[in-house]
Image (cartoon, rainbow, N blue to C red; front, side):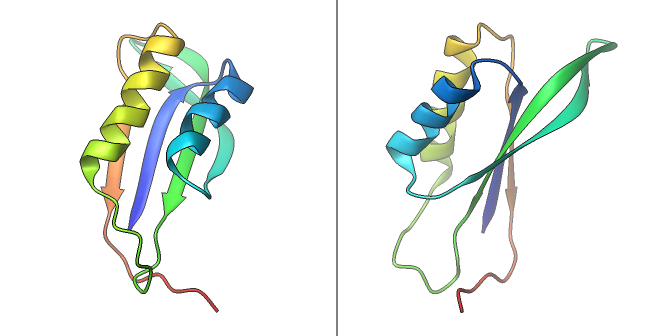
Length: 90
């Protein structure tokens, strides 16, 4: 399973700390997003859980992290995605 959290690119280190409290591994990358017709710097957090992992992630955990980011960055909304796929570690 792949989970993504889209937020404004600010307070990057604090955002990494928030995510790191719940998940051991994740990827953050930067992009350009639009909100209410205005361009803004975006930060995408991607959490990949391989299908063979004993770690079970549910949407509640993603919602908790996203809500903390939303409050910390003083945002109206933070977008979350859940993408089913086949992941494995080699």
